[in-house]
Image (cartoon, rainbow, N blue to C red; front, side, top):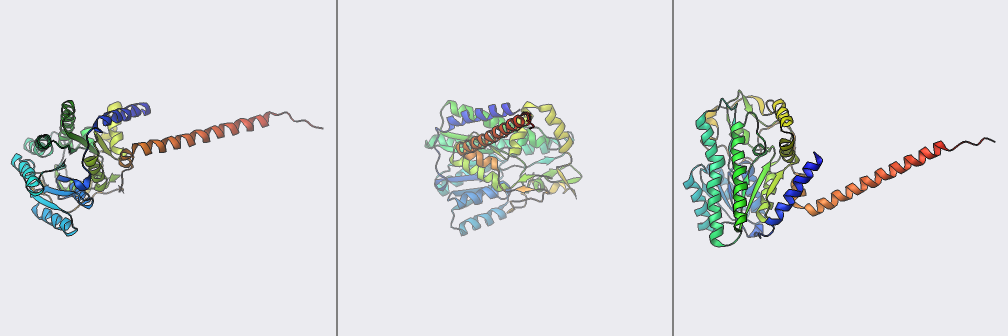
Length: 372
């Protein structure tokens, strides 16, 4: 397993070298479009981007939350504009682009973050609900990606497309089968688009973010077919960890970014030990994806209407890690490699000293005693 992981990491490093040829603007020189900006990861990313000097185009369905966000950012001296938009509608995606061009002359990074989930067994979920979720989670990304590519090509200045996927896009999951399917589609689209653009040497960096479990209102916004309310139970990461990954990739071309070793290990184990991973998920996910509260009514979900806004965190239960050391290590691969090499050398020297001491001790024990 260790050697397989090393092979994957080396492959990622080789693929990232081709991305280094694309030069992206520094964050404080960028206009960044963020969909799903009224809560969770999108809200954390908008705030962090603005704090780093970027101009923010915040898009979401919740007009009241967007208005509060833009007022907050402008009150801090940042430049921001809001766009009330439902990304499941193509005309609304075009409105986001038009607003960015009108207000700031264009955009440099487009973050496809908007998304929603459905909790329930695959055979229980209605087809119309599945289709609606694909419109939001997948087809919106296709539409926005095509629009962004055309924008970057036309202006001739490199730009970034950052698609927020999921570790459920690397590995199917019980209870969230439709959500996993939308993310598998998103991952496939992202990889295919990236290769085509690389082949024609287009000025576009295409990044896929792979978050693990994140403490956001994601579960409260989801439509639930279960008796108990969806919730993360166990270890999870703060939305700021995902925002950090997104904004790093906005300025540094990167193929993939995993948020948390949790997400990376799920992908590795799912690929090299799929049946083992099946069993693990069958045993754990049915009981760690809901709270003890009764589930919210389906008509209150954010599948067809805006969810509540201005909340980065959710009502999950467990341990929240504020940072992802995997993200920080990926941002500084040379320092990380040097640190690991140093640790490895220290462990090697310690083991050699221990082995040497054992040999000396055994030698002393074997010396013949001479009695006079």
